[in-house]
Image: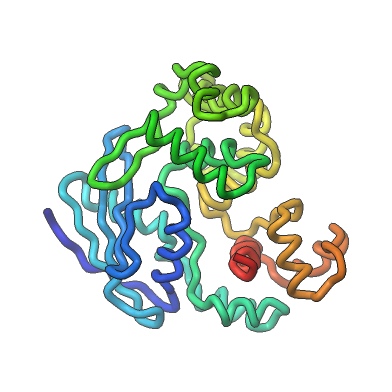
Length: 287
């Protein structure tokens, strides 16, 4: 077991991070101890790292504990997941001059956290399609606990090879719809047989990623935007079709109905190049 102390620039509110992550029962965390155990795959090998917050929002610091694995690569992956290198101070200053100032002040230091595994992120996006949040979370938990595995308290999503071998009937037993079961299996086959490389895709242009993913059955614009946001951490995305964002704008601007696309285009003009953070803080404002 080794430990390492990490210090980053504030503001960064890890308690808000844990609060949001606590909505998912698959996450191994303790709000009082300010700690979470993160599942990390490197070349298919499962590793876990425990991250404990020891600092404040203004002066964030963390202790990382690891039993084994490539120390440098694991720390780099944690930095990606928790977005430790993103200058939240600059982003807050940017939104301080906009209509979102009140929301940013209320949730100061909230970063855009990535899902722990890109393939798991895609699977979760498909499972969550057109379901209410409570059932979507429950269905995802059933799926991961049936076909994934647990290590040191952290749950790993099943790898693409495992999912590609599943049958629609097996997933139907978990209460998947037939169509959703087909989509999940198709995504796994795109990775195992179709040459979709989720590590390579991280570095490609958003339009290139869109063009590759949209060809896969079951993946539409909403899924791709969510993957770009929570799988890859792209900073300038604003999913205007998202009902949560529409409701948040309705609340913010005290509208009698949801905003039109034309109105949303007008609102977001001054929020670039950080539209993803506008999306995140709008979601937070109604959670």
